[in-house]
Length: 116
Image (cartoon, rainbow, N blue to C red; front, side):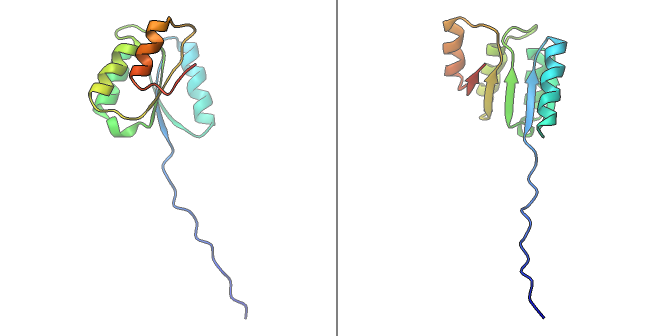
């Protein structure tokens, strides 16, 4: 009889969860679908206030934030400042067509990983 060596399977890790904030419905749906196809769990918010509320209620659920800057209720800078003040230490990506240097600097001060 020959012995068979079993290779243990790696523990199933949870999929990274992304909170996506975007007020343009077409853009929001497109980005969410792409992220889901890539294997991420995605929650979407249609404005900064909804995104802030979701993150404050469920802070441990999110690994990454992708946000627009220009949104109703709270802008990207406003809600990101609030979550950083509340202790969120996860990664952040800002998705915006064009930003003045002043906003770019403010995002960098908030620890934004990338601006696309």
